[in-house]
Structures are given as structure tokens and as C-alpha cells.
Image (cartoon, rainbow, N blue to C red; front, side):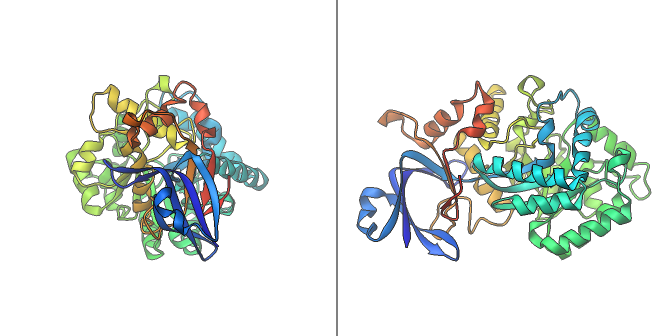
Length: 429
């Protein structure tokens, strides 16, 4: 039996265009074990097709596609609120200690179940996720994650605490095994060039490409990180002449159309050209990069205009636990607010929604099936209470602004703002 979803509808089409359908209807038809979109429009124009259908009445709500969080560490849930005066210090003092707890299988399984239940409730059903070094933690993440996530176990072979340091052969063997097992759902994940030796990065990147897996790591998040990584690589054989952080990854064969670089804030003209040429994408994490007083790491403002000028794909991410809250609504708010404060034009809520939905789907090569409400796509959507606006002000930007800014003074409330979450046309929250 078909389904009809009655709701006000927000359908992101581009950075500048988000279709709004007041008193809308989405007709869903069964496909495999779920539902795909057959038609979308105003209910008053489609009501003749409502015979012999299952009607889901969300007419007092507004629905939008479920979110893609393109950079987060599910094993860092415990350190979201820890002091973040310095990235490398925060990693050493809190993050590595927290990730080490995942060596215990019982603990890892319990936390995976809890985390992925929580993230579903925020409306996030896809993205790129970092796990710990432990094989079982990755397996549990895949077991409990609902939606379309690529996930990888971090590789840590150098400059890491003893309790998380892997032998290069061990790290390579495990990455090869998991890449073969999970194929395109796996993301090869060198933690960053500081923590993963170049031979391991090169060898595992070849295996990832062979198995059509994704690749993800960190790039140019802070200036002291860049100085440190270039200083240690210039002492390594074959890397004496490298000029930039990006050059290291290029030389190791890490850059590709299936590679996602976290952050990419402090990039030179040459690095932007390299990322563009290799079709490498960037995951921008505004809540993590935000000033310390906003619970971020204070890494700096991402220049999205320069990135777009260089034809580099990018999408938004929460960077849990550098970012303090799971909800992509908080990430969207931060993106708009930081650019507004810096007097940068173009950072609208419509753009933020597109970069939290379709952009992520495009980077994960899922945009033919997900990301917005075009005919034939999967019925994955999240509902929120429809804000009250005058007819004159009733448009996508104002609706999003009302929803998103409603919790800006209590950011923890964002995680509970979603009312209903549907995956493949089935209500899961």
C-alpha cells in the first residue's frame, strides 16, 4: 500500500534554492523493504490520489531531508565538553584516554548502541564517522548505525600514546581486512599525518582504492598542527622537500574523489589547487572550529567562498567531540552565526541545510537516491514543529531561521528538537 505524508515541506535544491510547499503532500510507493517518493506537491492538488493509501498526518509539522554529518568521532562522545585550549593538548589529555576505553568489548558494544540511538533522534542518518583503533568497536558501530554512514578505524603508528600505538604491519593488515569486508561503507582513516607513518598511509590507500572504500583524515585544522606535521615529515626520507601539509597526503596517495578531509581551514593557494585537481572533498566543522567561549577549539573561520571558487566540494560536520553537540541544527546555526559576525555574505540557513543534506549525499556518491525530495528518491525525512510566521514572511529561509534559532540560548536542546524521524518511509523515532 502506498503512503501519503501530509506536511509542510522544505526541499533543498541548491545553495540558494530550497523549495517550500505549504500544506504539502508526499506520495510514497513501496520499493524493496521501504518507500520511495512518487510525487510531491500541494495536498489540495494531489488529494484525488489518496484512495487506498496509508495517510500519515504531520500537517502541523515541517519536514526536511534527514541530515548527513560528514565528520564526527563517535568514540569521543565523552570529551565533547572537556577544556579545549589547544587541539594537540586536548587530544593528549582527554581524547586518547577516552578512546582507549573502547578496547573493552562490552563497553564498546554498550556505547555503540547508546550513541547511534541518540544520533538517530537528532535526524542524522548518514555521514562520515571515525571509530577508535579497535576492530570490534568498528564492527559494533556498523551493527548499530541506522542509515548511510561510512566508518573507519583510526590508524595510529607514530607520535601517539603507547596504549593506542599500532605496529605498522598490524595497522595495515587490519585496514586491508576491514576494507575488503565493508567495501564502499568503509573509510580508511589515518588519524592524521602526525599519527600515521607515510608507508602505512601509502599501503593502505592502495588497498582502499582497490576495494572502492572511502578515505578520511584531518587537514590544516590549526596552525601549530601544520607547523608540527611539516617539521616532522621534512626529517623523513623522501619528504625532505615537501612544502605543505597537503603535499604529504598527495605523496602518500591519499587524495582522491572518495577522500574527505576534515577542517581544511588554513590552506594555501597551492593546496587548494591540489585538492581541486584530485577532487578531494572537505568536511567543514563550524562548532568545533568556533572560539573557546562557544565550546570549540578556536581553530579559525573556514573560507567557504575560496573553497567554492576553487571548485572543491564541501559539506558540514559536527566533529564530535571537538564539536559539543550532535545535532546538525547546532552546526547550521554556528555556520551562519560565525560568518555573519565576520561580515561574510552568503552564509544563509538555506545554504546550511543544503550543505547538511545534499552535499553530504553527493560526496558519499548517494545523491541519486538521497539528500532531497526528488521523485524516485528514498523517503528519509525529519519533522519539526512548524513555526508561526505571517504569510508575508513564509519562506524557507525564515522557517529554518525560526527553527534553528529557537534553541541558540540552550544549545543542548537542539539534540531533542526533532519530532519524527523516518527512514525508507518507516518511522524510527
